[in-house]
Structure formats: structure tokens, C-alpha cells
Image 1 (cartoon, rainbow, N blue to C red):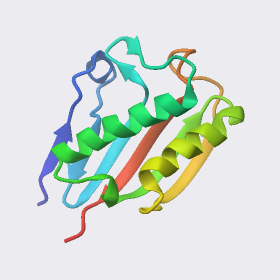
Image 2 (image 1 turned 180 degrees about the vertical axis):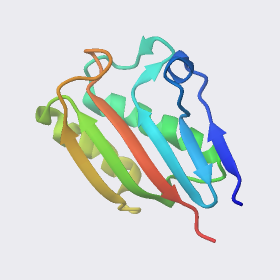
Image 3 (image 1 turned 60 degrees about the vertical axis):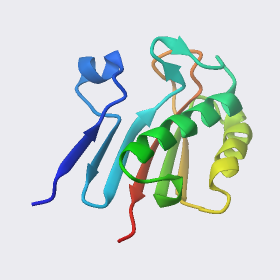
Length: 129
């Protein structure tokens, strides 16, 4: 049986909703939807580029706790509140993934948990043996 590693970022949402920031089973890591929230503070309200960079750095820290890195990411899913932000979010994604080139999806949604949040990201990483 493969061991399960739940990775927490100790947010109140994780306790309220009952989820982990990421879960590693074997060589697969699933990262939950991540926004530009630091506790209750919104990072760069309304700024898609800065929010995306913050999110990717937050996820990178979580992956490192699972002995992985962004280079292990095989899929990203970006949920954005307005396609007008697609170019800026894409530019931030390219800053971190231009050489890795994971499969990616960008979807417009009606809202996130706070109106100043414009993007939420989830990922799948697979660690090579």
C-alpha cells in the first residue's frame, strides 16, 4: 500500500472545509485550488499578474515540502474571473513554466471566494522515478 502525505498550509479554510493544500500518494501530487490569500489578507487585490506569481510561489513551496518542484508539474488549471486578465495570467504562467510546458487549461468562472481575487490555480505533479 502506498503512503498518503497530506500537506497543509494551515489556513482556516482547510479546517472549515476539510481539505489539504496538496496530497501526495506515491509519485503523484495533487495541489488544491490556490488563491492569492495569505491568511485573511488578499495579496495584490485585483492584480492578475501579481496574484498569479504569488500563487505559483505558494504552490512551489508546497511542492518542495513533498520533495518535488515546479519542474514535476504536468498539468495546471487556471480559473479566472474575467478573460480580460488572460494575457497577464498567461504571462505570469510563462515566467515559471516556459521551459516545463505542462498541459494547461484556463477557464472563466463567475466568482471566487473574495471579489478582489481574480485567479485560482490547481496542479498535478508527477515525480519521476
